[in-house]
Amino acid sequence: MNSIISGPGSERAEALRHGCRLVRRTFNSGIQQERYRLPLGLGPKVKHWDIVDGDVVSVEDGRFVPFSPALGFGGIVEGIGDDFGRYVASVKTRGAVSCQVHGSGALVREGSKVFVRRDGDTTVFTVEEAGGALAGEILAIEDLSRSFAIVGFRLVDDVRPFDLRGPRPR
Image (cartoon, rainbow, N blue to C red; front, side):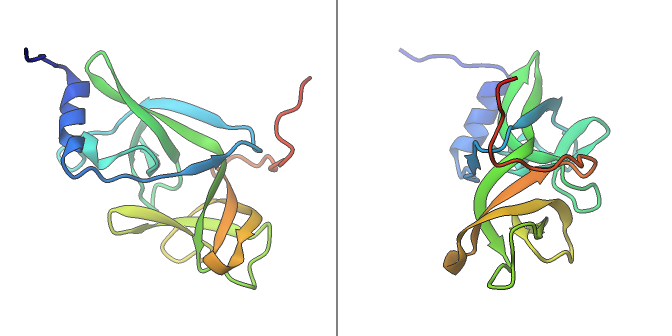
């Protein structure tokens, strides 16, 4: 017996089933996380499979689009679903992620600014400003030999400091 699956979600699942591009992110729960839900900015140049969980995105005209340094850091995709026939993304806009930070080395310290830039189909975190957009700062060095750090990320207009102790009861 065959099942019939229809709707935008099935179209996305079928497209990603063949040659899915995955971006794994490990989030650190020491920083309180914040998120937004907005529709994907789809059009002739952007298809729904161009944005997957773990991607860094930008915001343009109230919609999430693939990351562009000119538009700035808009957050990290947590999940994508469909809402009455349109794709909607849940994006973490503030939090901490454990990741490789390109260009980091012995001279990089906690508090160093971290930028995100395009690298082919994906994005990378780096301490080098050229060609990137500000994403946050290094909160802790995890493994200097592999250039791994805990990066606190936030939107550009968010000036609140990071607190590694996490949310506290009121």
